[in-house]
Length: 202
Image: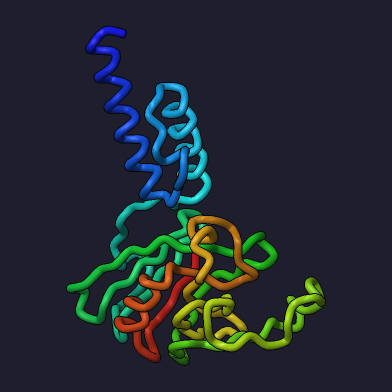
């Protein structure tokens, strides 16, 4: 193998292994050095990225809200992203989200944050229990709780913006109606949002 070819393969292996580590791939896959293994890693990264990453773009608040009183959260179901602006417009945040599994579970429109809970407990809704009778009636705060570390309760019954301990859900259609964020992101949004923050789901 000539030096140019070897250099190209070594660079690809380095880039692929770094990307694999960032995606949580471990073991032989993450440490592969040969051209064949590198291609396999790159294919897995490509599959994971397409499946699990939102299409991100920054937005301005003006097309969606008449003002920023109490701050504003916009959830875009198509791009699977949540946008936050503070009350004076000086702070903007963009977070990847999970969204509902199907259109019949998806609700769109205007609502607001009515309650904030750190370490939320969870009870499945009657509709969830009907679909999944094996689910528990109650889950205490902790690593098994589907609401993650923090939850913003909306004025719509049963709807929340919350965290998740299952990071595979982010960027996917994976919820029963709520909007999920990585725990570190919901913790930040929890600190920024207030009771009364306006929310629009589109």
